[in-house]
Every structure is written in structure tokens, then in C-alpha cells.
Length: 415
Image (cartoon, rainbow, N blue to C red; front, side, top):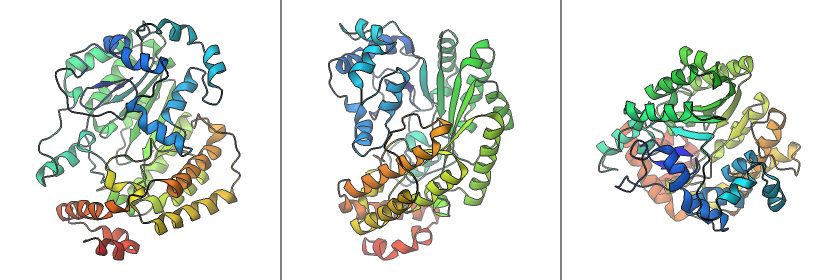
């Protein structure tokens, strides 16, 4: 299950359902996490048992449509279930008896063993494809320039009683397996250190895998030392271009510092036997940068992962690009993939070190498929231009300085 930045509890880390908090919204502290998991999630659990698709699972359905390994597939694998052999693998799953128990009303007496914990929106970056709920810096800017009416709800981790409740639940969970932390920027969010320190007091920390995602602008030796106390660390490193385009989309980063820090993280991961992964959020601005990212990942033997095909903001989807540009980017990716050895076996666990190269090529192929077959949304290009123009005026920036090859296109759309 997942705790969002504002404290909302959700049935999956990939759930695409969002919305403002109301009286009925399950928020940690107001609703106990185990009550939410065992009872509040009953409707979703029952729908799945009845074979009905869930609205909040749409991102995963889209990923699978274009050949990208989805969060749904990854989570199924953890219970021994595969999509291609669903019926038999479900019947033989060690969780089969638990599924049977939930058949009547969707209830369960299990507890979550795998969590995504969004610590809040405390962040030092204002990425153009991000949202105020995930970046305090972007939220302040959006509010100042009139893109939002009011600031998001405060980070739930600023309420110590809510953090203490989560720590109590985790400390009493037998078999706790995986905790993935994101921000904002994870490494500067105070709640992250507090939770790590609390977990370190328990002997079972050596059985837990910790995941985190960082924007490659922070290095904290104390946190690195604490992470070394856990069974395994899955390190996500956010970057979208190996050039200054990254400075624009992940404002206000500096690409030289970002690459240097990424190499430092990779070196530490090798020494500690952690699993580093490049995390990308491809957009209309960085689609042409993807090939260099894949080449770097391949040479460094580091996995690559994007959580989904970008859904919001709609104006930055790759499908907004003119068809001729999409075709050119797709052609370059295809040519590179063809020079490699992509086999037909789908790698679901992209953190398996022995399958890194295959998973990289597989991910690249999914973007080829998306670029070739995604719905045409070029009608949104003018809206993207106006959005970027407003941000550029706020930041004293200019997208044309970073993507001069698109100048004629942007000018024709009103930049």
C-alpha cells in the first residue's frame, strides 16, 4: 500500500487516483493504516476478485498496452503470479488461500509487507513535469504566478504523531519486506531520517529492503551510513538528459554536478552491493534525450526505470510532439536496439543484476512502441508552449536556449 505526500492512503504505489482531502478521505492518523488495508480496501479487492478493472490502475494498463513492464506485473511476481500464465500461477501462489478468504467481502487479516511512503513535497527542485503536491518549491512558484489558487496540504510527516503511528505499525509487522521512500526530495525531508533511526532500533532491519529516489543534488553521509544497516538498498537516481536539457526540465539543477553525483552514488552502490537504477520521466522535452540515457545505463550496467508513460501534465506528454519528430526519435532508438541483442523473454524484475542489459533494451523498445502508436495529441502543443513560456518568465529562463532545434516549432506556437 501507499501513503501519499498529503497523508492519503492508497491501495497501490502506482494508483493514479488523486484528489483533494475530504471528510471521507482515508488519511493516516485519522484512519489506522491496518484498518485501511484490511477493511477500506475491501471494495477494490472484491473488484479484482470479480475480474473487474480498477480506474486507479489505468497507468499500468497503458504501460502493458505498449510493452512496458508495469507495476501490476512487478507486484504479481512478488506473489509468484505471472500474467502470461495467470490461472496456473495464481492457483500455485503461496497467497492463494488468502485470496480465497477474501472472496466473500474483500476483507483480509493480512498486513502490508510492501510500502511506498511519500514523505511529503519538501523539495529543492521545481521540475517542469512535476506537480505542487510533490514539490514545495514548485508549489510556491505556481501559487505566485497564478497556476494554483492555494498551496497543497502540509506534508503528513510534519505531524510527529502520524509518523509515530507508522513506525509503530512497521515495528510490529512480522515479515516486513520492502519500504520505498520518495519525496519531494527524500534526502532533505526530516521524516526520512526519523523513520530510518526508528527502524534501526529493531533487529529485523537486517531483513528489510529499503528503496529511495533522489534527484542527484544531495549527498548525506549520515543517511548513507544508516542505509548500510539494512538488508538491501534499491537506489533510484532521477535524471532525464545527459546534457543541459536536464537543467531546464529539472530546474535548477546543474548537469555536471548531477552526473558527478550519479557516478558517486553508483560507486557507493557497487561497494555496498546496493542496486542503483536510473529513474526517468520522459516528456515531450526529453524524448530526444532518451537514447543517450539508455546508452549511459548500458555502459554503466545500471538499470533504468520510468514509473509510467507520463499522464500529467497532459501538455508535456510525448504524444504532443509532431509526428515527424516522434518518428525520428523512434527511428534512432530502433537502430540502437537492433545493434544490441534483445531477446523475446520479458524481464519483470528489472532489479535482477543478471538481466540489466535486457531490461534496458526492453524499456527502450516500449518507448519505440509508444512513439509509434500513441494517440496523436499535437493539438496540445500551443498549450505546452504557453505553459513553458509562463515558467520561463518566472525563472528568467528560455526553453529555446536548451532546445534550439525546436525554435521554429515553438515560435509558430506563440513563444
